[in-house]
Amino acid sequence: MGSVNNFTDDYVYAVHPIDGTKIQHVLYAGFERFNDVLDPQKIHDALFRLLQIGDWKKLGGRLRYRGDKLEIHVPREYTSDRPPFLFAHEAFDDTSIFDHPTAGQFPRSSHGLCLRSLPHEDICRLAMGPGFPRCIEEAIDKDVPQLGLKIITFADATLLVTIYPHITWDAFGYLALKKMMQYVLEGREDEVSPMLGAQEDVLSEIARPYRNIKGGEEEDPLLSRMKQVNQANQANQAQAAGNPSEPPPPRPEMDSRVMCIPREVSEKLHQHLRQESSDNDDDGYDSLRSDEVMAAWVIQQLSRASPAPRPMALMNLVNVRFIVPSVAKAQGVYTQNMLLVASNNLPPDTATGPVGPIAHSQRASIAHMAEPKNTAQFLAAILGAIEANVDTTAMSSTDASATPVLVNNLTSITSGMDLDYSAALVRQGESPATRTNPLGTVDFGYIADVTNPYPYPKLTMVGSMTGDGTCWMFGELPEEAWVAMEEYLAELSY
Image 1: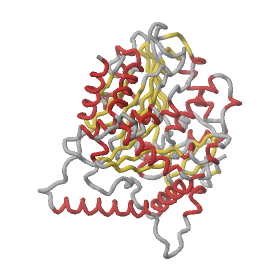
Image 2: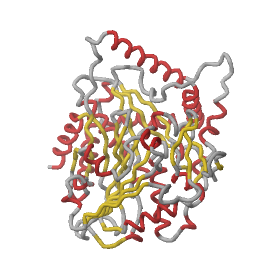
Image 3: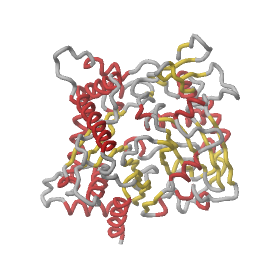
């Protein structure tokens, strides 16, 4: 349970060091589309009740500063003046979701092969409800809850939109909340897993053996690299300020798109990529998982679409929950940010070559980070950087010519998402002739940046959300990369 603030009657929870870094000061809108009509009041009540159970109440609090440190303040009792989350309901009872100018932009698997550009500003407007903040600073200044829930009902579907800061959790924590809401909806409160680490930071404990570097010992290489990148960035900024006539070359603008690849097209793609590999499988293509191949193919297409050959500075997100036994076996849920960054720098000839070497290079980078000592040392370096006020975003290559790309492979936690809100079902939406999922379950998910001061090119892979073999991914990449992928897949689909 949270401790009681000396000045108010609130529960006060810690914001752990990694949760509180500036890179987490991003506001997101998470979307889940149910291709059925659900009862918004039942969903509201399920979340309200969940945020009263044990330390799940931490998510019903408000971010506040004490000095320069963030805390989460939770009311002893939720009231209309101090609710656990902001809430809005918008109803289009006579309108199909696919006739809505913005919500209708989200594709479904029955649409077939699709690479759809999403109107970012329209998507963000759709997500907002009355009084919802547009940035972290606004949420803190207005003392509003860290979470906002907007439910939009249509004649044939329901869209759940959750507004949240990255400070609150990572994707695993987000999905854990949604699953616990399902248990409450179904009257299974006794099955709600306890929230772990609400006050004590398990990541600091994992890093502890490597935090006490004695005088004369070599500084952690990652911390040294972050300091070097910080210094290089500061030098480049100073040079640009002193030579305004010679600004640095502009980065290409990013285009937000969702990619839906049906099973049959995905199978053709894998066959084609296998043919591109060596005849005797010297590049190890046959040992790769499907999601590894798909990520490598996107990296290849991104690199090939570049106007000039450039190295790729890949930043792979790795989840501590799956690699540290004490966390993986814990009897409960850690919702906090538990992501490591496995850096992988690819030279142009590798990045533009066959997908086998790209994928194996990615696998080796992730496996290296997953070694217990390397995991602990990474965390120690990040915590050391936070204490030294070093920019923790500086984890990519020191090569200024490299293209940075953030790769977030969520396939292991999103494929066959198994999020069932049928306990709130009002009526069926999509007909059995076209639907591929059971009643009351999610058929599409998406995450949009509402505000993001760190607009890296990024790729998020979510696999097959409904278990029908369709491959879903979305991201922010240069337009020419999306066009290259679309043309490549179009040729395969004929």
